[in-house]
Length: 231
Image (cartoon, rainbow, N blue to C red; front, side, top):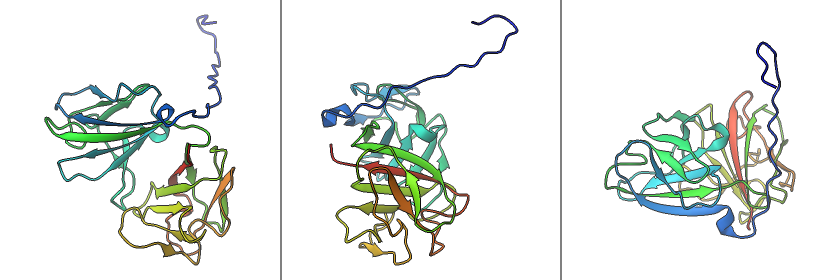
């Protein structure tokens, strides 16, 4: 292996994700004070590698921002905005680490003397899954997931276009109802479907673009779905 001039194929295999035995195995909030210094690590007390986090300035009037390892490349989604996925330079988030994360100097995440909170999550069966997918403009389209149980909450955002966040929760009136994360409206009855007409299962959830809203299934658009269940 490694002989000069020869071609090789390397295959990396990850062990199956382990079920969480306690909430602290897969979730940790961390409050911290920024120092304005590049490449500062925060959240290093976490005992798990991060897959997803939400950060927010606590005394800056800032809104929450989402980052995840599935599409890292310093891309961010704003929970309060309909905007498509945006770039985030190295001065904001340098890396998502095996334990915690490394911040740059931007006020979004590390302004000197300002206080922040980061909610950090790990993917795990029966707790949390991340599903990137491409829309096909279909009706009641099944999207596979690896949660292993029926999701209790699903959040979806179009990465490619300016659209509402769509949130389905088991506490809503039914399958056709959803909330807009970027708004303050009551639950909305999507009679033409946003999360389809079929209830989510332990292997699939459903999306629909009958109303041509682009929210969950516009043809060719990229989407991120975040799924939770109770540990």
